[in-house]
Image (tube, rainbow, N blue to C red):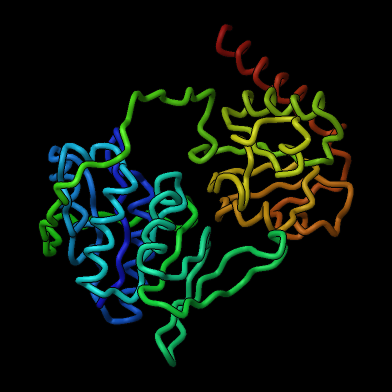
Length: 334
């Protein structure tokens, strides 16, 4: 019994999405009145971080520690996770929709012949039968689908950034159980690591997001958003069509197929506000939308909606910000 989450380990430590899963897992476990469990796979030196998951809401932590688990080996990890699930029989099992979570969850589902719902952004509990209602964009990402699994544990992957991370409660206690690691060797061999180079401000962590859609008209005009973002010390985001047009790389995509952002300030230029984009905008403190169509969905959601051509407004905004910064620099120098 229980609600379980997969606690993901990376070379830098426990992945931040783990704490997001713990927060939502805790909510679901309380609704079902069952304990919250976390399955953790990692190297021996990760023990302290793993045991501390109890302070973030986990009632039980299942530890599989071995040098071979310093990196995720899908085949070995699948055996361990399946063993725990068969022994503990939880009602719900959640993975993150990271590259590792998306590699492991289908293997576990296939091994146990379970259903799996991918890229969920919300969950509900159906009171009459304790079913997990799994909510995700569907049908071309234009509607929100509610999915219920016929198998248990009910399994889903969760988009990173959708839920707030759990807050730490120092001194909170929970049970820590050791899980035996199979003696069989993994068929996967890690040859080397090549960290992805990060350029500029991390979009998922940016306090200011300057995003553009097809309303920017061209790649040349879209590129002006980088200048604007630099002036605001923010990051550039984009809609899926813009990325597919080749105006910017998919690293900048916000939405179902991209990243989730939760900035203090979100500026959307030439973005209509289709569902597959807006689901990636999580509780901004202030949302500004600029569009020629006052009825565009993003304009309706905005705290400040500016009816106008983004192609004309962006250069004017850049010019004005430069003037303000110039005046500020002059005052400091005088």
